Amino acid sequence: METNNAMKLETERLRMRPVTIEDKSAIFEYRSDSETNKYQGSIPNSLSDVEAFINKLAKHINEPSSWFQLVIIERASEEIIGDLGIHFFGSENKQTEIGCTLNKIYHHRGYATEAVRSVIDYLFHDLNKHRIIASIDPANESSIKLVERLGFRKEAHFVKSLFINGQWVDDIVYALLKDDW
Image 1 (tube, rainbow, N blue to C red):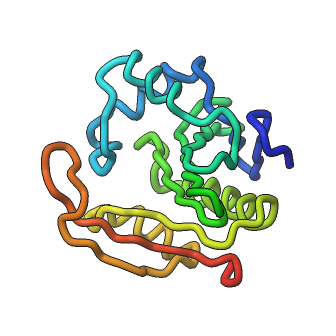
Image 2: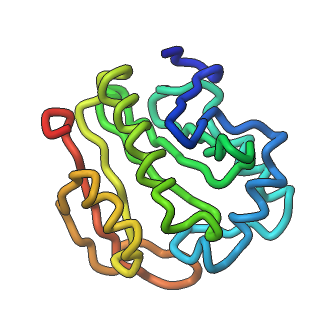
């Protein structure tokens, strides 16, 4: 597997590749939906907001202190149905954080599980990461079920620790070790 922006992952029903500026309209379609993104830190109001988001992302995977974003494409339709972000931490760079956003019309079909499982395999086996975390709003029951289904364990519950959309919210941290995968 390549470790640059030509990186691609495939599953039975999905393809994942690095996000490009050409993806902005498809990303805006689901990320601008307040229902789909009610647990996100920001909801884009325009295509230029999505462009700014894409332009801030790392151009290469595994850069310390960066976010790298993949689009999730349904193979049958070739439609972008979501995206998955990977946060590569500081200089030791053996830990990552992941987050997934899926268009609400594709919820409850197993796509998020399939995409996240593939990325976990890649992070542990191709990039030799030690630990993956997921930071989740306690009200986001779907994401909690997703990470628990994949073997993540709850490690922390921080009370009113994040200021999102004008209010202080709790944050639950789940983690998965390579040894447990």
